[in-house]
Length: 268
Image (cartoon, rainbow, N blue to C red):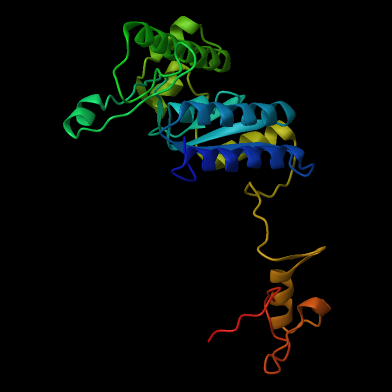
């Protein structure tokens, strides 16, 4: 899905970086993945799933489903050992669909010609200049079926149900969190606090602090120092000196600057 941005590539990069940072951070004892997504691009969902699976092998990981965690949102939850959902969470939707636009009729109406050069039997399968051939339609359906079967296997492994049972619950069907709990698709009913309490028991920590990932890089960085925090200290009356390279050349500034660009702007 795309919980951070409409572009699946952007959201995928953000989430995979978050899992990598949390996995490598020694101070992190466990991971709670909060999912609020109706799903989306299959490739993006698989990339996020793989990143979460690597992190879940390294550290105890729990999923907390928000209002919606369906289709790709459920897919990325499958590496977790324990899944919480609210009673009204919309989840499940274990399925996949696909197709392509056939624009050939419109191209004819506007007298637009296109030439397609391909290499390989199915390389032009998804072109919008013509419909599927019978062979291409069969191949495309085989791809959809293979991904659906993989989705079912992941859900069956996580929920400890048979593949036939998950297939019966799947096929695109949507369940409430309460129904999903009764059907075995989620483990417990609860929100974020219940997920944190469960993870606390699993890790054995007595006190914890919640941090969000991925951690944002500071806007301005000096080796070993964050200029934004330095500016806050300075304005608050601190006596920390700014690096010489960042002192202001403006005689009226009295040294009170937040950041110094590496060049001057002359507006005429």
